[in-house]
Picture (spheres, helix red, strand yellow):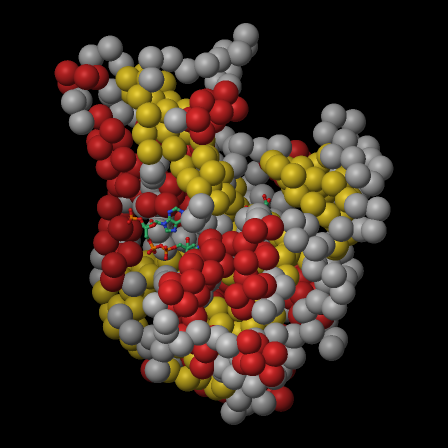
Amino acid sequence: MQQPLSIVQAFHTSCERTPEKICLIFATQKMSYAELAQAATCWAAGLRTWGLQRGARVALFLENSPTFLAAYLGIHMAGGVVVLVNTQYRQVELRHILNDAGVCLCITDPLRYAELQNVAEVLPKLLAVITMTDWNTGTLESWTDRRAIPWEVTSFTPAPIQFPQADDLAIIAYTSGTTGRSKGAMLLHRNLAANSHAVTTAWRWTAADRLLLTLPLFHVHGLCVGIHGTWLTGSTVDLRRRFDAVDVYDTLLQGNVTMFFGVPTMYTRLIAEARRRTSADQFVISSEQLTSGVLYPVRLFVSGSAPLDIQTFEEFEQLFGQRILERYGMTETLMNTTNPYEGERRPGTVGMPFPGQEARIVDVQTRQPVADGTLGEIQIRGPNVCQGYWQRPDATAEVFSADGWFSTGDLGWRSADGYYTIAGRARELIISGGYNVYPREIEEVLLTHPGVAEAAVLGLPDPDLGERVVAVIVPTPTASTAHPRLVDELVALCRVQLAAYKKPRQVFLVDSLPRNALGKVQKHLLKEQLCEV
Ligand code: MCA
Ligand code: AMP
């Protein structure tokens, strides 16, 4: 298969080839390639009528749905740049991302519209909001004069297809920064196309595949791996609003899907579901189904976004008869390395670079490449790597070497036969259920509470989420009287200000935090102490 210039072009090529083929299944809704193309061209026409300029930023603040996908394509066909927004984001994240990216238009739903309203006063760059009530209809409200008009997608005459240029900015994907404020990774159309081409080639993805996708579309795992691959190959995606272990297990039993992509938490939950059914004597996947592939034609389970432990890999193989293919990616670089489709899928490793891409390990201090088997920082180079961070030349310069290597902040090594293993992180990052959480962002919110003198946030091992967020707090001297329910107040504060998955699952009150001679909190000591509790 030839590499397209953009995913939009890839989508339309697939559409021309098989217009009647089902592209998207969502609950009871089925859309052919031609139907999705029609909806997307209507979106493009509507956005141009509204006045969207080339290069203008449009936020998608929507749950998984056909609307998300039609609007996504339509924004690109109208020359706009998509800003992805996690649907759990609340005041702090929304204020920062929408202002930082200079978002002029936000497409959302009624639930999230209410959250936007909470920060309306501090979003001066946002000109209008489109609130969709079903996949086709909604309201366009001008936020400059608060006038609202109906927004009915099919009322627009489909715009002639315009393909974005390969070098145009396609997506700004925010990824948490060590300073507490997230940075927008700038992905060009050619980055998206090149990585999807590499992924679909490596995983032998063809038009015959049907992907069960329960990942959120606002992250590159769901969107740039799951959806782009579907469109590029002209295959079908069975999209769910969210992950539910019972629903996924039942779908696997029905035998209609050929691939499933998930984060490790999804696999541990599927294992638990299989065990629950076995003990409840319910219908489970039999060994005949596994070997015959008739009722159970899934050919590929992929895991990524967080480390998959070896026990999960082995238990899954026992219960589902398949060796999970683990791969490694990052918002800034899309997919980096993969275990082989054919050949040994080695548990605990993330395989080798995708075709046409490079990886290497460098010494953390000298930045020079190290020998196989030596621990260092993983660097990535290739057509998949983003152009840097939106309006942050300082942060961009920090992560790129002069010859184009991108420093991931992940620590690891390469075996003599080329497999990469991730051993840890040079950055202070918690990965909870596949979502990245930077402690600093939560500490900043906790420190705004009058009962908090000092705060340290860290991740502790968690059997479900991989890591869970916990906070260690030194209360102010008067906190016990002024805030007798301090812990509850702190969790509530985080819930209002931040996405719910960032809220501490445990809060420990202590007299002091361990610090080194320079005054830096020694989180590794705190972690050791808490693991013993
Ligand atoms: C939801 N909650 C969480 C998480 N998810 N808490 C901690 N960590 C989480 N990951 C909270 C909710 O805020 C809510 O809190 C409660 O748990 C239940 O919410 P629910 O929606 O029912 O959650 P869930 O369905 O159990 O979600 C778990 C999940 C989900 C399915 C594992 O987190 C998920 O889809 N994760 C995938 C994330 C992802 O796509 N990452 C890719 C990033 P409350 O009850 O208080 O309201 S891209 C990336 O990393 C790179 C590029 C790569 O390599 O892929
Ligand atoms: P994000 O910033 O959300 O794109 O998350 C990217 C980070 O997720 C990487 O830098 C890694 O730390 C982590 N990650 C992704 N895939 C894996 C994996 N298979 N194993 C371990 N960590 C992973």
